[in-house]
Image 1: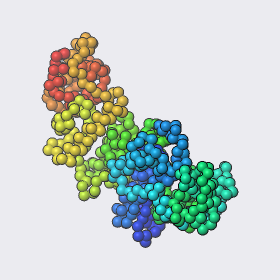
Image 2: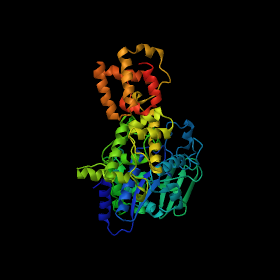
Image 3: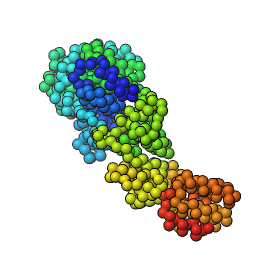
Image 4: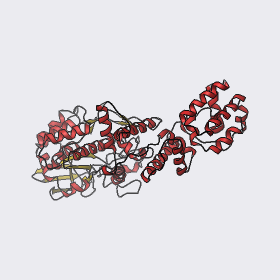
Length: 520
């Protein structure tokens, strides 16, 4: 059973009579919502889909904690933004001046990326929820039991919270910041005095200018929204972390059964752990420049307690191959004898899909490595598809969906070659052979070019070409390295390149004939 199905089963067994199960994810939009953050979003999405698959009513809510304070000025933001520290991030201006607020800048980006990955979530903004005072009763409970909450938190702190500590922040009605001293007067009344000099007493059922602090806010939401599942990163699950305190506050303060909440590991992409504040991030849009959206989803279906490394180097070829194999196994085009492995491949493939199930279809799978070559040697995608057909990588008589998929992969492979590929994958066929290359070729190498053309002109398959090259090497009594080097020099002015039997299938035959015979 896939881990998403296991958690769905656990959720249902805990409360089999519940009318609707609720999955939650949340983040403060104080920086880029990066590919690491999306591990949580997609983990929740997979469990949500697993619940629906079991014909259970389910809801996935994604909470934007945009009523949190602007804490510090991150890299890439002007230093003068320090004047906004203490405001809600939803009230902080957008330094890039393209959205209504600092938080909306990142929310808009992330929600668009979520749509690209077909994530079905109801997005909720705390900047809209708290001002409506919908959490007034939960805030009252926290204030009445603030000493008990302080003791729970202090069990895990080296520097204890002092007496008089408040579990809330109040935003000043004058300056808008949380630089306030608060006093709980009982019932629903708060008295505050701000550093700016303004002071007031208010009823938080009527004025939504108060917010619970993070470690109390989280378990409060579990109670308020009836959350059944919410995974969290390993930093939250560290001993004494927010998960531990959240569990205790949920049970002791809100008398609520906490959700099923496994830990997920980090996402890495060549730069170590991602951090928005440090500017060390990879966005989903960065992945979608080189990965098909289904493959991005497929990457995240791996066991949640293992680190996922998403490659931008030549490792991307392996990721495409893994997905393609799972697709073939799902559609019965390839056999997987290990039943446990087969079940995991099939379920991961199902969870990776971005279309309704009745639209799923087995489509041609042009090899990504071959697409990388052909997308650089052939600008015209229609011509590239024809070459793929001739090379036997895709069948003839392709329908519209197949053509769309092939063109998509050609475009992504070209993006990868231009932006990320190691040098050996970068290809630019010479318009003419430099004079120094002509002088460099030995007589045996010139004969090799003639033999290569003879093999190519007979429209042989990649395997047949490889066999013919081996025969020619023996006949000419030439070193294999020198044999292949001859072709790479006259085509690329390099001593090595892509597998020659594959590479030659991507180049126009007229060009090859002229190039090889004029020097032989």
